[in-house]
Length: 516
Image (cartoon, rainbow, N blue to C red; front, side):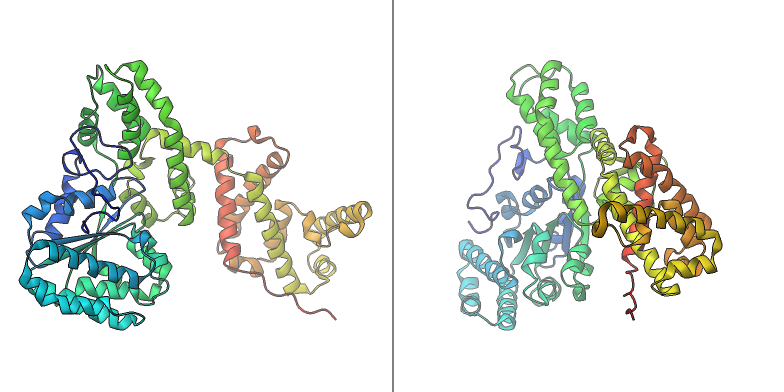
């Protein structure tokens, strides 16, 4: 049946404990009353009009289940007999043209199934025109609009659910204006359809990463953010567990600490617990938690990969562990809306205690030396280019004449360079600044603040404090003595490295002047 999810079978559900990772609907669906209310009000309340709505949330939080439960069930069709719901997993579509063809084909199938011969006869010619249009994207859009217009005139309302909408970045890249074409279907009153998207990212981010020129597309949407279950919803999920639970309060506490009420993670534990038979004991709970850990950690890795791809994983670490260098109030609000963090007084906490501990472990295991090596190379290159810009290629000789207080640094570097040349010959570094340390680099910059200040953008004292931390941390890192550093030292080191790297990446070094 064409109105189902893009698989060949409609997900089935009988009251009980839902299968982990599947679309959950009907009596198996739990909670989300507020979100369901928003979707129904925007897309089902009116017989003819419908609004565009985006369901946004982290992976496996229940976005697809929410959309399917609200629009695709037979009970919803019975309640709204003029509703034509079309479900398309956008990841399965190869182009915007493919998407438009599938939309019209599924609407046509639903119209035929309705038994409304009058509507079928009135729209068939327009559907056949869509069906026969190939190679002309503009004509396909026009034909699709005319077909949907005729469907609408016969009192039917099309609601298109685009699951996995993050894939729009791939689907629409071959059709400039693809977002605008989709917007036109949901915006123009002559053929307006209801439009629902489910995605891990906000629509604005998806559009900006695909075609920033189509900035008006997110403007017609209301975004509904989906996060973890609240206490009552988690209690209901626990109640679906087969058999008697001697300590439901204790199980609730364990699941909140471990999963924060995340539906997928909590279900993973409960499914294993249910497989162990009755009654539910403390020993079985501990065993279920232990057996679920690999699945939970796999989820964390997926989430980290998603956030890192958007540049938000470091932001999450800054907000939860600190210090906040690049994180903005907008970042905080977005992560809060997505349910990954929540406020607790003046602080923010991860969605679960277990995830918070995982983030702290990731933070401790960061590749400090790799980070520092990258920064040290970039910083030395940046400083040398600025000195060449001021003094020319033989900058060292000119510098000691103009800035005699820096003579000791230059001579120390020259001695180290000569020693390396004696030992390694042609393999030795030709850059004098390769033999500097953090405080050396800062001293060179401080004496030429007219060159470096405009790029760094802060007062000398601000950067003096940061280079003191870098100098303090560098040697323990270089000699693998991380235990000599406090957690605060490590956090500051990572934050200051990130801050400097961000500045250096936005101010590429100039070309060296030609020799001779």
